[in-house]
Length: 201
Image (cartoon, rainbow, N blue to C red; front, top):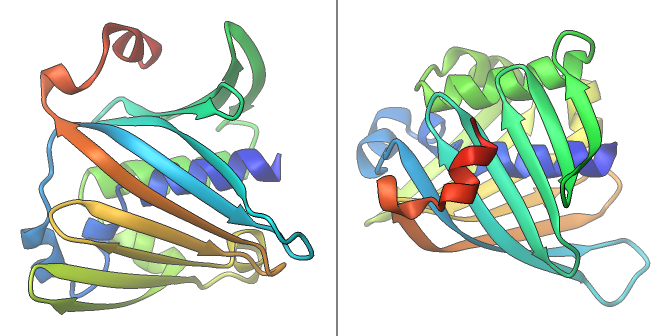
């Protein structure tokens, strides 16, 4: 379950930088397309294991609908976040479904996600302490969870970017560290495949 929540938080972080930083300046720097898709490359360094775990895939963020996070390598896996649920798919099979009505954590994650997409900073500032800086056309932001339970679950987040988020780093309380890089970003109706669009309906 923790792996699902970490992936969900990574998906949230893909769109979260516009709500942090020196807020107004970073908001003005970031593009805010209704549809954003691209590639992600993820490296997870576990405490006590020398070689990092590597994965990659595609993601799509659709304003008002949700986030699709499709791991392609090393094992196919799809995570879909919508307003009222988080669903993990393996092929055509639902491997896990977390309903917001039953899981308070799902409500929190999805509440943060959709407040970010709507540009509502109040919930993010309630959950995280924000510290950011801007240099030229680039920025970086650190998010530290205010609540001990949330801090224990996810540790701290660090983001860098320009017009879009470029990297996300999660430093967990356990010492595990996840780094993710976004590339090949596309926006607009042509950015998403028909299959991806159907998955978010």
